Amino acid sequence: MDIEAVRQLSAYRLAAAIRAVGVRPGWVVADAVVAATSQEEPPGIGDPAPGRVQPFQNLVVGTIAERVFRERDLALQEARGFTVIDYHERGENRDYGLQRDGVELPINVKVASTLFRNAESVVGLAPEDCVPISAYKALGASERAPGLVYADLVDFTLRERVDSFMESLDDEDFLIGWHLLSWFAGPGARRAQDQYVAALFARYGQDLMALAPGAANFRVISAQRVLSVMRANPRRVPGLGVRGAGTGAFVNGQVAVLAGGHGKSSPLGV
Image 1: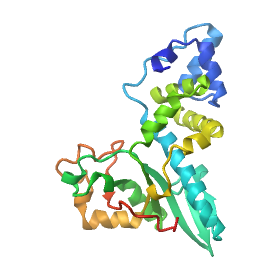
Image 2 (image 1 turned 180 degrees about the vertical axis):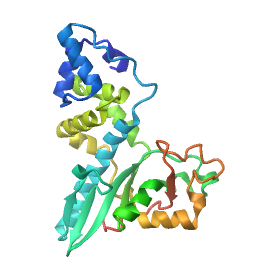
Image 3 (image 1 turned 180 degrees about the horizontal axis):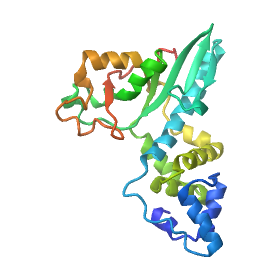
Image 4 (image 1 turned 60 degrees about the horizontal axis):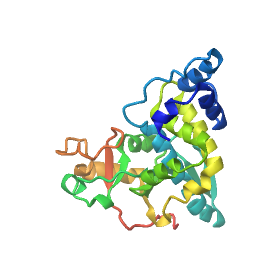
């Protein structure tokens, strides 16, 4: 099944799938489908986007990294007397906080899933040694959470494995939802994405987490270190006037700080 096959389904079938995967009223595309069932009209969802909706793709892959880091790595710290605080519902730059004795280490979990193929010529590092960090996020973190560290899951084929897993699902409801959210956005899409991902991980979370590599693939760098790289070695900051930076140095149009770290383990001791 692909997006064109999904578009040929009746409004009744699409609406049933939307309800089954937990998407509630509020997304313009889903609402149009549901309205069509009562009016006995075609779904009327229009044409898909010219390319996949990257924020949704990133959300699924990023959720895998966050859950893997929580269950495989932070759980070990709990056994050592630390308390793990989950900040996802607050919508801030902390995903987790690792606390003990009144002190917190704020952590943002990310995925480095796009290989910077021109890294050698642009920033002087091997592509495998580059971990992209959004510079504007590091600047914001320096004000709101000065001690923030980024834990990046470095896996340049994880997105492809997730796509293959989803395409192989026998669960038609989740497959329909996957294609709708992968190709359509519009008002209310972000909330619908969150609702779908929550239902997806409730059903297939362990299978999705199994797609991720081990803890050795996490690289950790502090927001303060990112800023120091920006100041001391601006050549590693594509987008600040570095010639050739536009061919692989950007993820979703964001300037990225590129930091070496191949083979390093997490300073959290995990």
